[in-house]
Length: 250
Image (tube, rainbow, N blue to C red; front, side, top):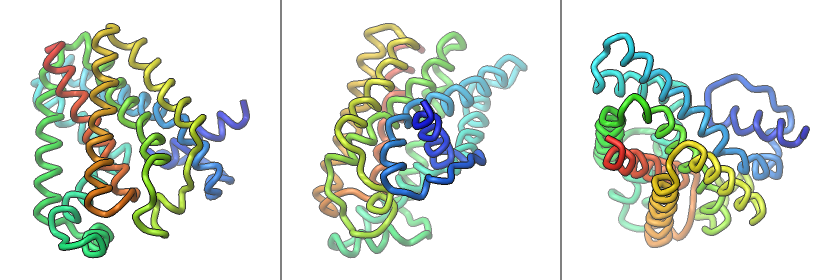
């Protein structure tokens, strides 16, 4: 039990801006193990965004504005961690001539044209999707989207080689297969408890497909993973799930 609580502290401290004491969090093996609870922290993030959206709707804020404000609050909660990864991947993959150049661009903290467009498309898709989901399903949908999109990250982490020897992904350590199975199992259980079976299953498939798409693209572009690649995979999976659920529930 102590290990699970420590994992939750490490994962929460990494995935959000909430101050969480985790004295052993700097050890790669501890962070790698903590990835098994990424989906639990994701569910918390999704619940916070969903409840904020629902509250704003309840006081008369239009659906589109409520969705925008809730998603903005979610970015503050997470420090836009994964959005930053998506922008860096878009800039690097779109602007670099070769793998070395792409990786160098991805290290650059400045936002380029490709990154800006990627963020714009992603936010617009999430915004309109959340606005289209009815009150009775918006919290559950956001919980599922955030849980599943983080539950696939350990699989990517163990499946892809490192594109560089340093950086966030390499320094964080790699979880083992058992941790990846646990992470996926928790994410799927959250989805099944939150949605109808068919919707939960489709959401899980879409999350896996989105992550696989980014994995294949990363292998072709830079030969493996970085922390930015994992962030981009989370964003693609999250956006795809929300669009799917808006189409089915809206």
